[in-house]
Length: 65
Image (tube, rainbow, N blue to C red):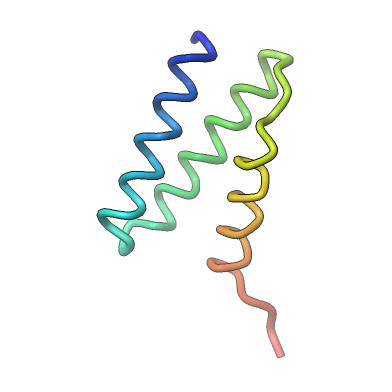
């Protein structure tokens, strides 16, 4: 899969999160898969995508008290 196509799919996923926040967990997993595909292709991960993944992790897995 070409880098441009992966970037487009990631952008669509981000739009989906905005449109349907109730599906955030599923969309988060899809974003993680797309980032893994970039990694598997030996391409550097975009810093903003890595930061987004960290934020989604924090939102979906808040620290336990």
